Length: 65
Ligand code: F3S
Image (cartoon, rainbow, N blue to C red; front, side):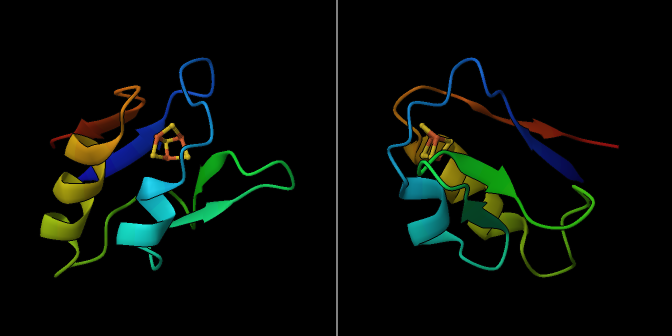
């Protein structure tokens, strides 16, 4: 499973890094960023889905492999 944030959609609501701080961080302006190489670590799938469904801009894309 991979995850990415569509930077065109992200408005910096911050729910992603509040809900899944191991997966997402904030850049200098508060926009979300994926930590690491975009591969979701084992055991973090639920947190990833939760963050994606809570992003008001639907900016988080989950890519199933
Ligand atoms: Fe951006 Fe959505 Fe996170 S708007 S900061 S990707 S909750």
